[in-house]
Length: 253
Image 1 (cartoon, helix red, strand yellow):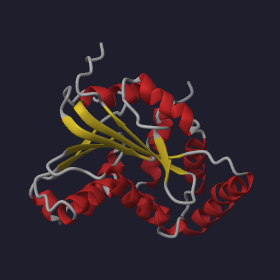
Image 2 (cartoon, helix red, strand yellow; image 1 turned 90 degrees about the horizontal axis):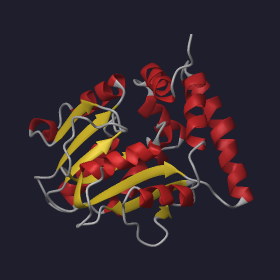
Image 3 (cartoon, one colour; image 1 turned 90 degrees about the vertical axis):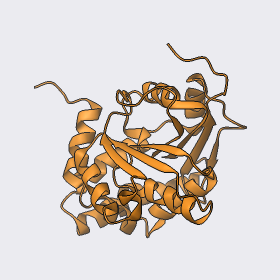
């Protein structure tokens, strides 16, 4: 039997854990997982009326944080989020989670299955902003995903990515590795029967390239990154990347 691709293996893993994924993440990070996403959206500072494409966002976390920001900060009832995820189970969780919200009733949040590396149902130049939160590390071909993000964004549109970066401090790195490889798997084993699946997710997350290397890939895709192109969120390894598709950018072939 041929070995599964990274996409197939990731899909299988998330199918097994979809129902418990958000809950376990909140417990193992003591609520930090959701706080990081709120901080990410705050740093992104969405503009009123934006149409956001949230990729690998099946649980609806980013969609919820984004729409709350638009409602409370911008007093904006017109902004929308279209959530795309490769895994049907994760999409089901997100739909159920937001089913009773006014956002769903007003059509401000929608969900669809799709592949970050081939967004075939998304037209060119159609979204004001693109987010991907803790999803890029799962992708087999990150350059293809970045090219697709560039394609679907309008000129002047913003790319925003939240990921697990690398730390240079040996002490902090040791603490984080203890958390990732010892504490979190132990706690997940107590809470669920899915320890092996979470260990696969952790392995994938820790394989993400150094943030400086990923910024180079973002720039190679055609985006403009200000300064060093990334920013750490708090005393963690989590990094946010922000970039802009130039307003007069040539369309990629």
